[in-house]
Image 1 (cartoon, rainbow, N blue to C red):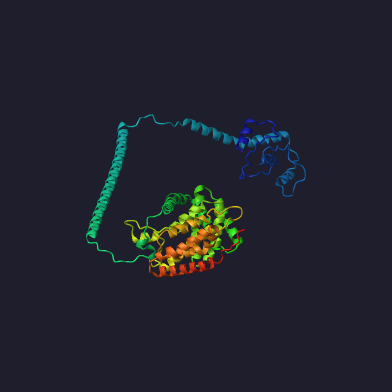
Image 2 (image 1 turned 90 degrees about the vertical axis):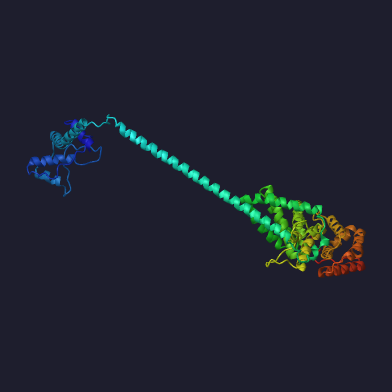
Length: 501
């Protein structure tokens, strides 16, 4: 708007049909004159009404018919004015610009002149030296106070830490001194413990030096739990994978039936799980979980139904054919829970507590922290040994041999009768023979016959234990062997003939 006004001041009297000038409208408070000249001037001013930029000024008022409400058209008709001349148009434009735009130009010029007289600049007068020195001293003092506060706080923290460490060391020294004094007093006043009989399977006569096989697998277990387990737990992805797959393996093993279809399906699922292992650590840990699940299934289910050992053993053999590392994992779990699989009678080390020794022998405590009974213990041991016997007697499946063949059964039985029998020994031997005895007779013939005669005639009479477990085991095994001597066949457990081809 202002630009248009200034433009008209600089171009008065010139023809500019395309001018973008948009002058301010006339003062609305001025009185209108009724003369023809007033009509003329007002009509001429309408040419400068607001319009969009670029719209040219009309050369004259329109003479075409106008709407009835057009005030300009009515005034023109009253004044009998039809067309404005070009000179009249220029004159009206000049008058309007001079009347409205020139005062604005004057005001602008006066403002510029006033501003030009003003001069604002920074003071060149220097500050007082005393003021600068005072400010500097104050800042230095503040900084010094801050430094002293930090040093004081640090020294206080160090003193408190030293005092706490000293107090802790004194408390530890005092506790050690008290413990030493108490131990000395207990040694001086020690009385022999009341004779509490050990379970018959852990009597002093059963304490033998641990076998090399037992030490080997116990060391493997300790290394696995100290090295491999922390690595799995530290990796969230590996831990989650193992936890998820363990549930699938547990359900599959728990749902096994005496059917080749179920056996194949379960073995394939386990092998697929092992194939999905994301690293060697995960693969090894999953093998451990498979072995743990199978041994636990034998401990719970096979111990009350020996025929359940056959489908579980066939599944294990199918997995071992592709992953033979499962054999060591099974032995690790067997030795941990049932050392009779080696076989060995666990030795009690010097200084070892009775509880630790019984735990090493495979005993458990119930919810009331009471040691389980002999019958429950012997049943669990027999169930886990039944799985071992079922695996060694499993024939070759398909075109692949059994990675844990019948030879291991012969080794186990020979070692067992070369050790003095204990209360649990007859029950374990009968369990093994009822599951794997027929397969061993088929494999070793007369040699197996001689071994059975040696058990009946030489080994069983050496059992002098009079506990109920020993008496029952000896009687049952004697009957079992006498039936064999009469019929030439061993009484085998039902369910052995699972179709594996």
